[in-house]
Structure formats: structure tokens, C-alpha cells
Image 1 (cartoon, helix red, strand yellow):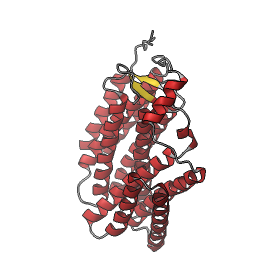
Image 2 (spheres, helix red, strand yellow):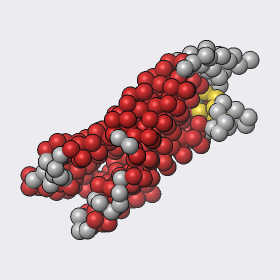
Image 3 (cartoon, one colour):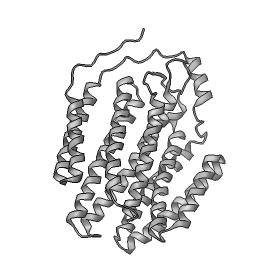
Image 4 (cartoon, rainbow, N blue to C red):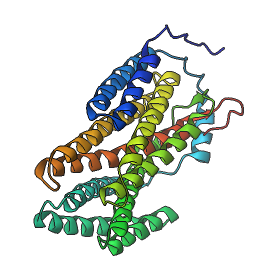
Length: 333
């Protein structure tokens, strides 16, 4: 019989409500109020995560034959060539470096950044072509097509530049997926647990990925001056709330899971850094002139953590799909 842990009374939910209220109030009054709200929200999130440190007991594990059948039926197949995983990891790091250099180019950091950006782009294109030719599947050809589209778009006008920046972050998330499914850990049998959430954690994780993708698109539009920052700031609050909810639920249901718990913690830590860097970049832009060193550093940091936030939510969504099964049907997710 499944055992449940009844959490003790907590001040975290009302404290988080106060923090989010201050953040929203500060958007229309003063950044100082928003900064105080972010601190209060962070403290509340930490308390809330601590409250759920011991949660519902893990569901009974299925037999070895059931796990093997689930893996064969649902889990994507890992690449049989161990060295190819190293190439996919190199591609992911090269793409992240390309995004960093691209943010520097957008911030007009200088000609060395532009030259480095071109070299990194050529490297990413060559690695993508190599992996696509070796894998020869639909995902590989799609990634190659996105890489070619990124090369063709360039930085012609604000709208095209925003699309280029958005696709670059989507492409990076794809490279992280490649690296994950080609790793040795993906070849091992999953640690199956029961998904007790309603809606399911699989559904919630997909919604969270969709919200983060929308926020990345808004961020690219703001950075290239296609639109104002108001909607993007509001979206940051929604993304932060979704990520905290998903992370807390995963840690509550799977408090000892060797894959899901670390992935959830990593996602929340990266997202928290992204929120603070975002507001920091917004404040620096108000206090310093455009294209100065403080603005460039804040922008590059914000863009980089934005890419890592999207990648971390994608990784958690994949791991949830692989390690959780439905409560009623018993089907693996």
C-alpha cells in the first residue's frame, strides 16, 4: 500500500505570494520593490522545497522483465558507438559558445567577437553534418536543416535577427537532447516510479517546456528591439512559477530518485539564476549607456542562462517520460 507523508504547516506559500506581489508591484513602481520581491520569492521557494524534502514514498518497483520491456517499448535507443557521444557533447558545448558569441555580437562587443562567431558557426555546422550523416534519422536531418537555416538567416534586420537568436536556442536544446540519448546513462534501465500528480508530471513538464520556449522567443524579440520588455518581464514570472511547481512536485514524488531529483534541482537553480540575471540586465540597461561593458556582460550572461534554462527543462521532461509511468494504467510514460 502506498504511504503518504503529510507535510507540516508551512509559511512558504503565503511568503511566496507576498514575494510575487512585490515583484509585480515593482514592475509598475520601482525596480527596488521588484528586487525585494525576488529575494522574498527565492527564500519562499527554498523553504517550500525543504518542506517537500520528504514526500510520498516511491512506488513499488516493477520486475526486471517489466523494466526491460518498458525500455524496449518507450525509451529512445542510445547510439551504439561510444565515441559518438563525445562528438555530441562537443557539439552542445560548441553551440553554447556560439550563443555566447552571438550575444556579444548583438551587444556590439567588437570585431573579434564577430570573427569568433563565424568560426564557431562553421564548427557547429560541420559537427551537425557529421552526426546527421552517422545517425541518418529524422531528428538528425531536422537538426541539420535548422543549422542551415541559421546560417542563411544571419543578422539582416531586427525581425530576422530575433528569429535567428530564437532558433539558436532551440538548436542548443536539441544538441543537449542528442548528448543525453547517446550517453551511457541512457543505455541503462530506467528507475521506474509511479506518476501520482494530476495533471501528470509528463503533461506538466511539456507545458513548462512550451512556456520556456515562448519566453525565449519573447526574449529574442526584446533583445533585437522588435517589442518592449513588459510582456517578457511578466513572462519571466510565469516561467519561474511553472519551474518551481514542476521541480517541487518532482522532488515530492521522487525524493530519492537518482535521476529526476538532481535534474529538478539543476533546473530550478539555473532558472533562478536566469531570473536574477534578467532583472539585473534590465536594471543595468536603465543605469548605463547602451553597448557599454556592464550592459554587454549582463546581456551575455542573461542569454547564456536562458539557453541553459531551456535545455534543463527539456532534459527533465525527457527523464520524466523515461522514468515515470501512469498510476491507473500502469503504462510507462
